[in-house]
Length: 234
Image (cartoon, rainbow, N blue to C red; front, side, top):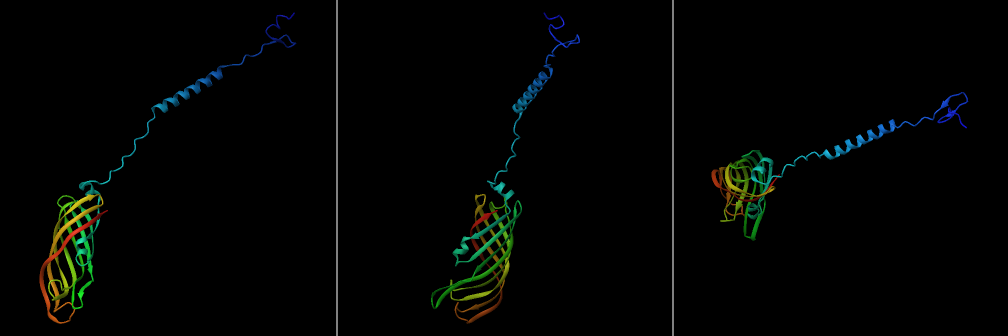
């Protein structure tokens, strides 16, 4: 029979009872509580998170006002000049204000047209100009008025008579027209122009002979151009 000291314990031979220690569960409960707290916090954070709003993208220019605020440079080609004996041309404008553009351009024609050996006509030229346009509404849209300084070296004759004139002309031009807005990068530009100044000239009896009729310096006031142009806007 076991003694009372051995019941519920282990006898160590010295009269001491060693009771087996029961494992402590306090640390395990704390770990479970902490993990549950972290999981709850993570779930709450995921539920309450919302993505930051995207930055708005500025819309592309669609109307005349938006186009005037964004567009600066325009390059145009006058189709009417090409139809008039193949005159090459280019025109550049730059917007410096809501209602003002600066303008520069050039024209070139070096062609002589012959129908027979004794019949020819020509309107040869090299022309350079600087000017500005005023737009009452917005640049590159609607009505416009323009002015410019212009130089032209020319040789023309055989078109309406055999008399031919060549010379160097310098003067001032005025023009007006209307620009039709097609889309954000294209306009169709219509216009008419006049110019006047002084020219140092020589006239000949016909386009192909060298017989001089007159020479000197004179004033002039003439039509300058008819404009039906494609205008590319950047």
